Amino acid sequence: MKNILTIIIGVLGVLAAVQVSAANYVVKELNNGPTGTFVFDPAFLHVQPGDTVTFESTDLGHDSKSVLIPVGAKPWESEVSKPLTITLSQQGVYLYECVPHNLFGMVGVIQVGAAVNKAAAIKQAQSMEQKQLMNQGRITQTINKIQ
Image (cartoon, rainbow, N blue to C red):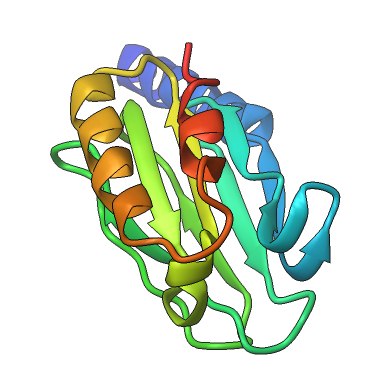
């Protein structure tokens, strides 16, 4: 019985350490930002599995919706002008957009751990960019940051 209790306490300690080490990143939804108009700031994040990302509606009228996610990952879609926090557990590349402003190139990329779906992300980014009326080249510049 004592051994089982020791194992349980050890497992709980490891889980607590994982929770403590998880980081939270904030992505601001902006009309004007350091890289131009209608941007997520930052537009690219490289995080680790278990980290969280909070999409903060800094300027009103924006949202965040996943467009491409790794197999097994959970898609998301925030309400317009409402913050949303997601936990990213699956390794890979996540592409997302602001639905009201996707034609303006308001897109972002998150790499979680290894870029296991990089080829699919590049293909999706090319498709997204072809539909954009403004800020051509932004998604290509952002996707090129994948490691």
